[in-house]
Image (cartoon, rainbow, N blue to C red; front, side, top):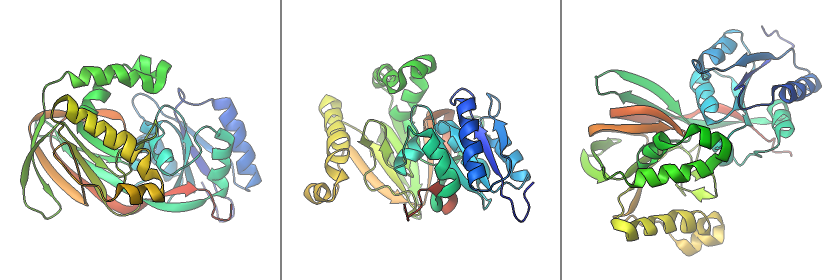
Amino acid sequence: MTNTTTKTAAVIYNPIKVDLDALRAAVDTEAAAAGWGETLWLETSVDDVGQEVTREALAQSVDLVVAAGGDGTVRAVLEAVRGHDVAVALLPSGTGNLLARNLKMTLNDMPGSVRLAFTGETRDIDLGMIRIEREDGTRDEHAFVVMAGLGLDAKMIANTDEDLKAKAGWAAYVKAIAASLRDPHELHLRFRLDDGPARRTTVHTLIIGNCGSLPANILLMPDAVVDDGLFDLMMTRPGGLLGWIRVWLKVAWTNGVVRRTKAGKALAGEHKNDGDLSYETGTSIVARLTRPEEIELDGDGFGKAAAFKAWIEPRSIKVMIPATDG
């Protein structure tokens, strides 16, 4: 328990993703230097990827929750912290580190990340929420901090060999992409964005993004901002091989290279939607699919969705970032 003079941090860690001895030493050093009390250590598991142990930490009135693990750990911690006025620090580990990438944090400096946890300042960011309706009519609700995706995106996650991913990182997705591209099924859905009219569409991929950057310098959603109170909706329906090439050029070159500088943005101009790739923004979306489809949240598969409602909770989460004075 905390008191009026001593702050306490809780470290929620994935034992597969971290070097626990090194992490403990770094946390003990920085917590002592900052005048904090003894740290609470809670381990995730297959049955609890982070939500329950985070709630256990919050019940003990900790002042800071440190998420030490991959994207799944971060997502679970932020889902549990939702509604609590407690900051979260990120200790990136694993393959994607998607939120840390989008916050432009250093990814491979564990001591520096631990120091930031105790010496940085907070930034309020948006949280994505999604309520998924299953084929049997049951519903479950989850948070996402980076992206929710259906179609090719989610099929790629479902087709990824986890053992190969652990050994080869993002190279494991090459095999999964090839398998997913052979799937001839498209998404057929009826949806409503905010208070707009109901629409029908057919797409290969639908992604609801709170952030825009992926590994390998891929800027999937060039206008997505983590604290603007909006999500970016991306839909793709390439027409054949040339269509896929056009989409890849737009995402990998125009977004990933050209638009990353102010001069490049001016050169590229405003993005123009076309039949291959389109973007919209909103605060909520309700959709129903003609058949259950694979869905992923922040890079993890979440089974199949028959329908869903997704929305943004503006600036509802506090994360630690480097202090503005350096």
